[in-house]
Image (cartoon, rainbow, N blue to C red; front, side, top):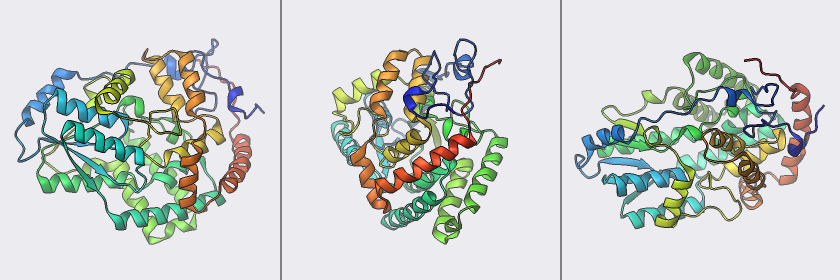
Length: 384
């Protein structure tokens, strides 16, 4: 068996994806299939974006559009551009998941104050309380029967259902346009890839793949008796419905767009803009500027790193390498820094979950041995 030390993992010679990344294969030069099959994500262009925005500018009763804002770097940049560059009367809307970080709240307050934008925080205390209770039960149960397939659903399954609160707000306030801030760089392939199911570069699954995922997640669900508690059953059912069939729940007569479908995502431009103009800051316990607004991800990334030696950072930096935004050397250096455990953040969420770090590490150590026996990470030769 190969070494389980992440530093010893074989990586693509062009990007930095390791041999434990699901679906990966290497050719005789050590280049992975993700690089060999790479096609640049096509953006629709600012002219097309302006065509849409011009239809709604100064047309709403009070606001022209809603901009979803979490305090993270990408959504903060979208808010800045929509207000400053495109002169839209925007309202920034945040849904409190119960896991939004102090850094996220601080960045939202700074940005909306500087931009003179109204901010609405949608916070359902009852929903948050139930979600936290469910997460505690689910995670303690996961420790007894760990699965690499259910890390995100266990710790973040209620996230999708929060969009329902945004939809209700839009409908009640008769706002005709919603602008999101997801880019193709943000779409991860590995989280469902361990089940052999992969989305496209925009994070979209085919109908067949959606059906497969429903069955695969359903199998994982019925393995744990705790999942049959009414509140958890409801959470998973709503989450699955939103995950796979979100368009059904969206209010009619509202246009839905993602900013980065029209404007190229560029990390340097984004960070330069929000740091200099909006006083945006990251978290004090990490060098990464990604997902500093979500309190669940320090733990999620820690678990993946312990089990398979990589995190979401390996994937996003690999995409940036292929797009020519970063060198392989810089990507490796940043990954080594970004993947350092965010101990203060991890300890906070573990306390809420009623689990000690020692308990978690013991489970991960045993499960990793089993996982690597079940899924030997072999040296593939790509013949594609």
